[in-house]
Image 1 (cartoon, rainbow, N blue to C red):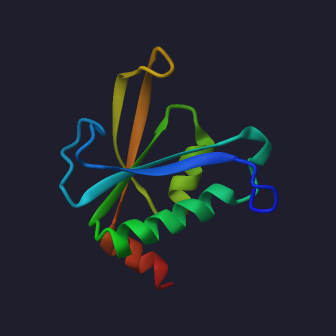
Image 2 (tube, rainbow, N blue to C red):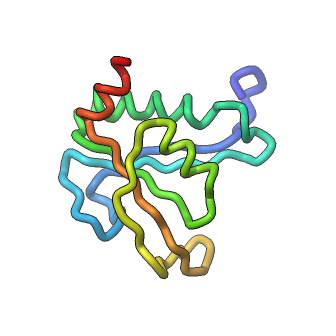
Length: 122
């Protein structure tokens, strides 16, 4: 939190040079990922952070599209992505998640530069 300096979550950009998912990713596309500690849910922190990261990706990094994903059943993450303008792209089943030592279904969304500009200019 800004007031206390306490870490409440994390957000970041992964470039196409990392293994994002099975879809072909152009060199001018990236993926964002985020998580937020449960005590901070429902305060609008993640949509605010995602929107700033989108501005950075499109304006500063000159990306043409940004990808994002959410695990099956994570409705909060899905809603954040929809709220920020991401559109469903595809689903990958039985995807290995090494950090959790399990397999999950992951849904992927995408926001193009053109769509982001339309949303931003509303």
